[in-house]
Length: 215
Image (cartoon, rainbow, N blue to C red; front, side):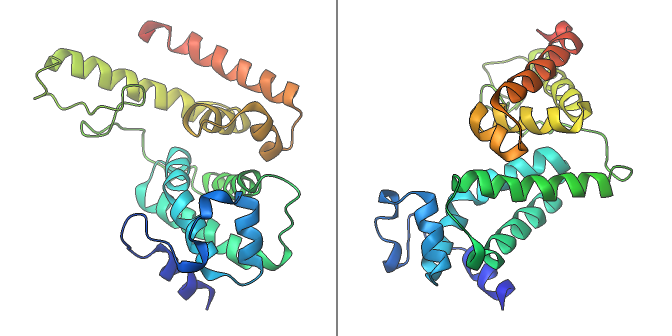
């Protein structure tokens, strides 16, 4: 039954469409919305799925480097959220609880598949992580040589992030790509803020040293 509920929530729907019970959902905190899920409000769960699906798929892709696996892992996160609804307590930010579930899944998946994962590659039609633009060599604004250099730089960054120790990698992905602050990352990783800052400092120092030819 849980799977059917989740598939209904993940199914296509017109942009901006909410179930009547969650009209004006923006006036609620995510924790309040989750408490409505706990109380049996299916539209509240739909709202959370629509809000966090893309960020979670992005997070999982950066961990798994596989599109299909990222989609499956994100779906499993929402399934676990739904199954945990009756025991949910709004003692921390909803996103902290959500990303703690996602982090545990991502780490377990990475450990289980560490010998199966392909080399990090970059597609020419994948957006640049800094500019948001694609590396289309037909783009009149950049030359083929510039596109190749940028592509190599992106591949190098991803490769070096991939090679970081597990906690450093998680912290960098949450900080740089998920725009999470130190406090939130600390709560997800169950560290102090000072330990989180130190973790990120070491990670960024390693990346700066290993990527200095591209800086």
